Image (cartoon, rainbow, N blue to C red):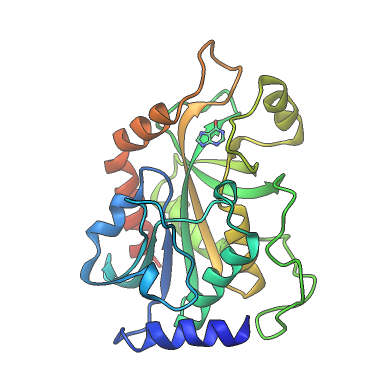
Length: 266
Ligand code: HPA
């Protein structure tokens, strides 16, 4: 992995003229934020040695470097989900690449179903903790001592200072626990009832491998979930991906405002 990562990082460093400080990983329907980056420079995933990329037409991802809210950022346009068949190690590889490029903080967004019945579609929730029900861990395998310890602490996965600043700016922001499943099938009503008993407020199919990898290499995270639907069994209607994308689209402006202001206060 070390050799490959060196080649990946050398290639990218050869193309950029300043180190990004903040990484952005943007979820379903929220990728538009990458288009608001100023003084942008893009590198397609497929031209980067060893960088994962989808071969499906219309799904080519890219790294977008530039400035957002005046901060030096790199956004991953195109995410790697385990349900697509990507291994958790690939996600670790991507996060370590960000680390090597100079990224200190990671802002992650995702679309999620609400388990907590006080939430509504369109709500944006500040994630305060996670539950890993993917039964996968990106750190399985030989430990990369250079990045972090064999048994990393997960008792505080989020950047406390950053979270406090965001809460001061948005005092009404709701907080919740995000539970990750593998997908791609949505959950059953019985699963959602069980997850509620576990203490989860939100359910989704991403984010957890990124957070675990980031914490391992000491990158601080801030995570926002967009509630795109009530989780299975809460309402009398089936879940659909169209609904998820539609709601994510509706909250574009609120989301964008929250992310831009969160970057500003950093
Ligand atoms: N379940 C899992 N993932 C999701 C959901 C959901 O209800 N909504 C958006 N992503």
